[in-house]
Length: 310
Image (tube, rainbow, N blue to C red):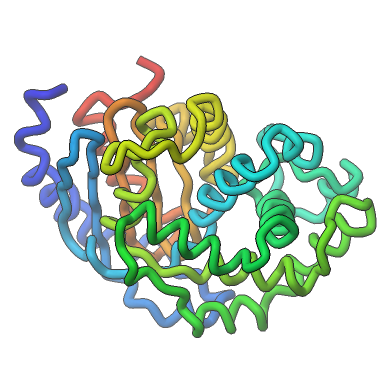
């Protein structure tokens, strides 16, 4: 693999060029009005490696709404705070249902299938709201620390859009509350959840901030332990089976990397013992994943032979 890395910068440019017109195959997430305003032709990519190198092309330094990618950070914070108690309240199985399914949650008596569908992430938000005096500030501080960048911020326009169009997420929260699986008040939980989804970060910031998952829980930039090796393994396993919504099986089959997408157009992929790939292109496919982003991650993984299933 090492002999291919030397030309990675040029390869990233080539991959972006090859996807130049493919954004038109997707559609931006217009159900959140603030996201509908984003230029669909923007696209960027960053590869950050655990040995300290960064390769970027396109709009890789442009902040965008991380949306569901925020669920990865929330999960790590919750695991660090309450340990294995978390897994008594949320499962770790693929859902096989839409990421915001209410029916499945009713069937399974308020226990979400996994922490990266909406119900599971709302439950994680409840853990954070219940165990941090200022959970929103704690979340933002955690991201800024991981990315070594104090400029990371919460996009208030996106937050207000989420708040105004969050009825289904509220329904998920109240349903879990009815089964006794939510501790805090639902408005407080949703306030945290919508806030974390409204965080804006660039490809470069995201790639840097997730390097600990590629390095057994240790941030290679600071040598600080972010989570245990066991928990890093668990997060990567969940991302492998459930991180790309209903396209997770296909993504594992064709790409073979733990990954998480967000409806803001971002896709992150963790390459254990190597680094993190992050792409951004707003138009989404029918599964809610970035059309261009999936293609670029796939191209990089194939070119460098990065699949974990080799």
